[in-house]
Length: 552
Image 1 (cartoon, helix red, strand yellow):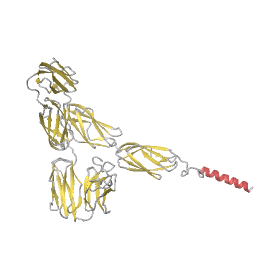
Image 2: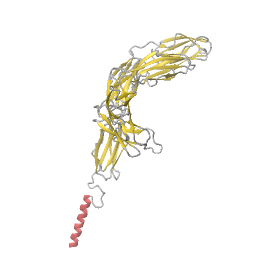
Image 3: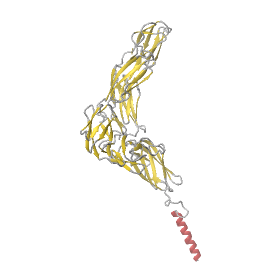
Image 4: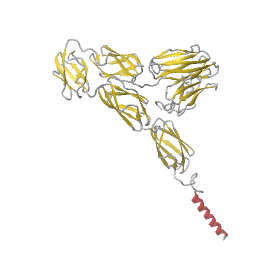
């Protein structure tokens, strides 16, 4: 009887353990619950934002992967950490030890609908540029395109863009984000409501030398255009889009007739033989003013093709030639001269003045901002925004001496030599009278390893790369940052014997993996340099929160 009772008790215990998942059950899964996470099946996260969720059920250990770089994911024990990248979409796949899968669709963006500061309809004069418009919301990165770049092209700088009027007509500018949201802007260039009469840039009577080619532009009327010659054995003619080409075949005379889709015509009397050929020309005026980021398009004709174009100041304006089409790009404010040259060396010059257009422009900024340094340090600062040229002055040159009193273009730099102990204010003024003041506190020089500036600040909207100077110490050096999300660091002159070290005395501080310096509140980032004797020095970068300014 006792043996029977013991057998029954043993059977009951085994049954109980089996029901509870003990004994030979799966390790770590005591509940029998299916694999789950505390995240919903679809979530949104902002660039640089960190979100944490719990993983449970299934059979530990857990893993998680991201299908794209739009977001990264890590797992420690049963905690999953999700970090937003530059923007876009990704799928997070969570797995347990048995391969059971849970997926989460992630959108990386602001959570706001895509928008621009541009109105729904924009009018731009031919050869001019619109105001500077800002893009926000949606999911980074943004793309801006034009339905007809021959009428209106766009210039884009991160989350800002301008619309350039190239020729009279209408176009649609479309702004898109990485998840396909879009905003459309109707653009009218010139007086598109009135049709310009059919015209060519050729005069009514021209001379073309035998064996030579002359090109002209056709416009107005109603495209497409056609062209014919009354005597093709004397003068050949072709038309491609808006480009008319007349070829001198043999001495003689012919009439070239250009017509549009509605039957309007323009006639050109062509003489093939001795006489003056068509001189090199362009439809661009001899002096033009274009907006920053503008890219007006003009025609080149006459002379002897092919044509080339050069700029004497590519930091202000560049020029490109495609066949008989000339595009001038406004790079930064200032002046430049564009020279067009034909195949036999004939030249035509265009004086270009690039200005900031519209009612808004990037604010004047100087980076780094308020700084600390040591005597005999030389600090380098960068100017962005505002309207060039800029003037730079010191309120006490005995303490801080400015090496460059003027800067000609946005993105330019100037230096300050720390001459004595004390505080000095450096004042930068742009052409409109806007000013920015940088206060520099100068301490006694040190003989050991040091980084200069010791402490400095920079706005979250500023993505410029800042150079720090290494003082003293014994190379080679190594450099580290306390936040790879907000900064990346590198030293000049890499050491060929060790790729992790460098022998130069400058540390460059750029944006980190986030792609911007955007922060939710003022944030300190520590840059640390170590030398070969294991001495270390730090510089503190304070990123100033601008409450989601341009780019954040």
